[in-house]
Image 1 (tube, each protein chain N blue to C red):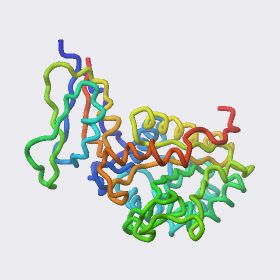
Image 2 (image 1 turned 180 degrees about the vertical axis):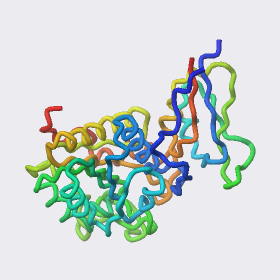
Image 3 (image 1 turned 90 degrees about the horizontal axis):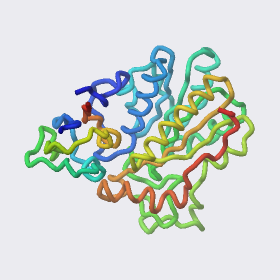
Image 4 (image 1 turned 60 degrees about the vertical axis):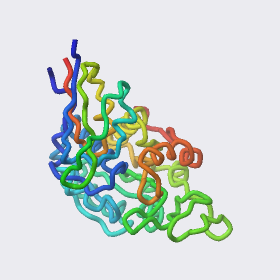
Length: 247
Length: 70
């Protein structure tokens, strides 16, 4: 019999440090598969963030340059301008891209930098222990919102993808999830298109990926995967938000 | 006739049970032994029904499943 599925070559043989059922490792694998399939391993530079995915460079066998918290888009801008032929992507969580890095992200998109942002939204700050993030849902209990997020004092969940869709330099914005086989396939397709938009020099592309965080949501793995569809996707609807690539 | 089978690297499996939820033939179940990391890894019962659809490998967060098909 023929082997039809094996670990992608670009994924190092390291053990993921992520909790059981985490979405990050699935997204790492999808990126690795794409780099394999597009045959661009020597021509990619990734920018991992602080946060749970801080060790992305331990798993992806491509060039990586760690950025300071939230500064992924600025670092990626520098890399891309110095190496216009290299595919540059940032890998950022919601505590990184939607909080401390909002300014960098919006202005990089507005300048139409030819970079791709992989924005992993799990509605909490994962690595530091599940504090409230700007993307935390209303009423959701976290360690810093023990009575649930209250709109009058903490505001409503921020929708970065919809905000970026208004920016002229952004050419491709899609929101997907990694909580079911079909959603994982759609995520891979979205990432491929975002990379292609960059390779074709069209402008800024971002894929927002809703990822389960069973540990900080204090749920079983299966409950957290269902929760993404049943609760989170109601607040953050899945689908293409902006596409002017013509691909 | 056997159409496919999978191999699970039980030492790297974290026992999240996602593959068991999505396997269309319910051929994956928790193992009765702990692995070195202290997780109950997934184990594959090969009763010849596996079609090698690779859904388990697609959803596996830890990339521990290899799929073989005719």
